[in-house]
Structures are given as structure tokens and as C-alpha cells.
Image (cartoon, rainbow, N blue to C red):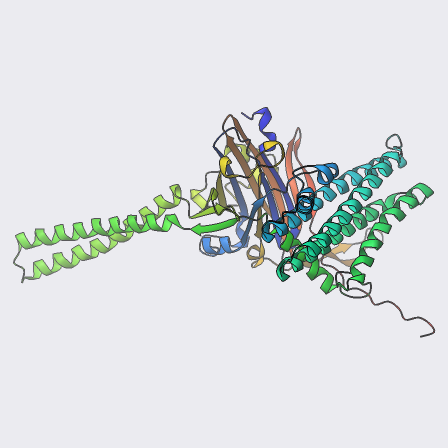
Length: 542
């Protein structure tokens, strides 16, 4: 039974990353009321037999190679007001180093600067979501589907955020300049602060540019054009700032913007690396398997020795009968050993996890938690009843059972977090952990047919024959089961998605849920590859 207060302890988000990968983002938020919080993630893949995915063609090692995992602390959630005035704000902590005249270790200065970049990015993302929701309300009102919403709230939200971001940038740059004049900073520290400054400028520019794009459906009236102009003034100001400092992170129409893309990707990783946790992987199952294999070899050897002693007591050692019994005993010993090894491997696979990962705090290097993973194939997978009930809402699935068999793979991940080892943010709240699992589906595409073919079509008026394009795609159901055990808070949720794949990758993802009349879906379409930029036409008088 789900506890009413446990909803925020385990948040999940599933999305398409690109044409070859989908991403599962998990937010673990321990309540702090218990020493340990346990989270279990199960992903069961139902694969059509035509894809030829089995334990032989897609072994565990290959599955883990296609699984990219990133574990980090959740970004502290601070509003713009908290960012400007709160004692726990990284901006305020940087300014206090100037106010109190205590620089401290330069690594902590860089840490505060990077944390400011992470927190400001989170605040701007929440601001962007709020603006998008307001734009949606206004658009729906203009379409006549609801009462027209006043743009006053939109203006207030935008102007308040514009003012806050400009104050953050100004105060950060002033503080960095004073630190550079007052203290002798190392070259590495100075370079890091310059990169953070560039990242802050880029984050602000991207956020406000994205909002202007979201406002494209709004009418071209004075109030909205004024708001567009105010937002674009921020974008232009930050671009001009980076141009003045001869930075390459400026969008150039008519080019491929490779340097811009590379630089912003590098700066994002550079600032957010303070949140990522260190991991140390091991394979405890292999050690236990070796012990079980040794026991199997010992039992087989005991049988062979028993046969040898029997033959020695019954027949002379130099005799044909002794020779035959000794050879047969060795043959049986070899088969017994291999049989026991298979039984031991099956037992280990059923109860033992294959990979164990220690999660370490990157600063203190203390254990934050442990992660265990395992993969099961075919008959070893026991599909839970709630997953079966959800899938059986589809008549195609029900009718195909027993007639069109599927190959089933289950990935299981268990994470145990130590609440006492997690850092605490404002008001003593335990910091959560973000776990990003990115799955590459390229191996599933190997045996697929061509994605396009033609079908014959007869026109009903003149009976002319035409060739129509038809698409060939495959459906792969993935059932996710999420469980949390945080002391008195316990909850289990199930999510079913359907990946629509062709040889080029993921076409779309349908999130399937139960309705009164069957399955209903919410579609997420895979992003199309970017088109090559078209060069600008030359002027007529060139």
C-alpha cells in the first residue's frame, strides 16, 4: 500500500534522448527518518522473436555495455530570492569571503562558483516551465477554449526573473573581480572562475531565447512585442558580453556552430561535475561462483575417487576390468562436474546480483550508498501480476500468448542510500540523489527489415494502380516497476511504455496506461537529426 507521504521520495521521468537511446531519470529523495532508504528498479523488455535477442546473441556483458549510468546529487532547489539573499546561497557565500576577508581554500571558491551555475540553471528551468504554462493558458484563451488570461502575470513573472538574473550576474562578476584584486589566485582558479562566468552567461541567454521561441504563437501586439524585446535584450547583452571577451560561444547564423556546441557542452560538464558521485564497481557474484564451482569440482572428484577405491578393492589394479571402471568413473566425474557447475551458475544467477557499485561522496570519499544490478533471461524472469494485467489490456498481446512467443529480458537495480552520509541543504533537508540510466537500443536493430517498402494501391475511380510508401516498424514493450522502502514510507508503481523501432532507431515512445476501455497512450516522438544549415544568399550587388 502506498503511503500518502511517500510520493516525493521516488520520482521517475522517462524520455527519448536521441534516435538510438532512451533515458530513465530517477530522483531518490530519502526522508531522513530512517538510517537507510532502499529503492528497487525493474525494467522488463518484451522482445519480438524476429529481433533474435537471446542470452547467446545479447549476453550480459553487451547489455551492460549498452547501459550508461550517471549518479549525482540533486541540484539544490533555490528560488531567485533565496539565491540573492539566503545564507545557504552559493552567491552569498562567495560574497562573504570578500566581506569577512577570509578567502579559504581556493578549491572551495571554485566549488561555490560551480554550485551557483548549477542552482541558477535549475531556477531558470523552473522559470521557463512557468512561462511555458502561462503561454499555454493565454494561447488556449485566444483559441476560444477557455477564458482569455491576462498577460499581466506573464509580464510580472518575466520582468522579476530578468531583474533577478541580471543582479546575480552583476554580483558574481563584481565578487570575482574583487577576489582577483584582493587575493593572489592561482592560474587554475582564475581560469575556472572565467569558465563559470561564461557558463552563467550562456545559461541565461539560452533560457530567455527559449522563452521567446515559446512565445511564437502569441499575437504580435504591443504588449507581447514589448516583452519579446525585453527578453531578447538580455540575450543580446550576454552575447555582446562574450564577444567583448573574445569568447567563441556565440551563435553564428550560416555556420555549423560546432565551437558553440562543444563549448557549452564542456562548460555544462565542468560546472556540474561537483554534483556527480564517484562509483567503484565490483563483481561479487564471480567470487561466489568460483566458490560454488570449487565445491562442484570437489564433489565430482569425490565420486571419481569412490569409484577408484571400489575398483581397486574388487579387481587387481593391472587388469582390464579395473581399467574400464576407472575410465568410466573419470567420464562420469567430468559430466558430474559440468552438471554441478551449471546448477551452481543457475543458483547464483537466481539469487545473486552480478554487479555491485559503491557510491562515494566526491569530496569526503565516504560511502553514500551501494547499488546492485542483475540481468535475467527467458524462463528465469517471473513477470509480476500487475505488469501482466497492464499488458493484457491489449488484444494483440492477449491473442498472441502461446502462439507468438517473445524473448524476455529483465534488468534489476537495487540502491540502498545511507541517509546520514548524504549532505543536507537548506532547513536540514537531506539532499536527494539523481540516477540517470541511458539505454542504447542499437543491438535491437541488427536483424530488422528495411524501414520502407511499397504496397500496391488501386484507385476507386479509374482503377489505376499506384505504388504507395509503407513503413516497417517493430514494437518492443518495456515494463518498469519502481519500489521504495523508506522506513514507514513504502510504495510500488508500474509504468508500461512501447518503443516503436525501425532500422534507423526509435521512431516514438508510447506511454501506455489503463483506461476503462483498454490501453491509452501518450506519444513521445524521437528528435529528428538536425538539418545542415543553409548558407545565406549573397547580396545582389556582391
